[in-house]
Length: 385
Image (cartoon, rainbow, N blue to C red; front, side, top):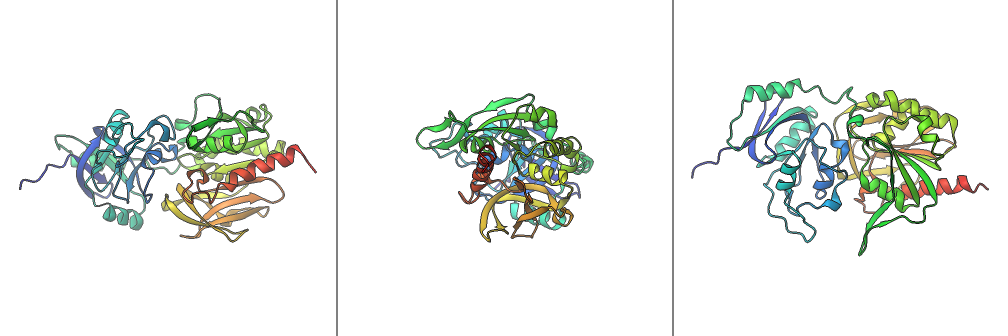
């Protein structure tokens, strides 16, 4: 039988090549390559702003089988540069599907490829670290291999790169949509108890929904918001969102703002993912690049204060160096995969953060208490004993 001509090529910076079948948009993109071990949620992953600058390879083979729908987007458009999967997406089989994954990717300008040995690719990432790659899709199967390898090698990488400014909101806005619930879907928060300012470094919509569901009237500010901008809204609490890129680069402008709020106010503060790293930097710690990061929905994290283990969703390529935490900052959570830091809090203040994503609900409710803790801290401050 004649062999099918490959219509997609993934070129690694070391010259390794993977061929497969392209779908979605055509063209070439360069990025860092990471792998995600989640069995569901490919649409949420592709629209998670924390994946800016990255191509995602999925270790689970059934990607695309439930299609896509507008309700599951975490932001307006896909942010991940592309995807690599083992099997070509099938026709969607789900009552919520609005269109096939391939059509959605093509319409949103994102390149994808199937037919790849993703186990081999994942092993390469684990052994060598997250590589720089060029991903190409050409229906005619014409690839300039030398140019693709050169493009992969020229990708500057994520170290030192501030990507939050590229995914943050252009201006402030209010948010009152709550978590999805059967049978009404997304309800509105009509009786909020707290005013929360959320600093958007690349916020996922479901995080904002969880804040609203916990009783917050949420005002979202751009990543470049200053302490004056935040405090001018007289918040009961400040939230620091997830986001992409090197935390040290984003910290050039985010850390002074966070320090300003901490120095001038006693309001509770809660951070997730990049927001966790921003808080750690503001408190005096440092961050480091990981070999291949944590990306998936099956990551066990231990709460050091309660002894409980939570099954969490993670997406980060940098981590807080727990050895650099100052004496008044306590490590609260650690990864049971590699012992890396997953949470901190300040002694004597309602200021805390976690590296993982409690809003993603892989547990499914293991970590929602963090939003309730934030709400309770705001309640206590408004009604002191």
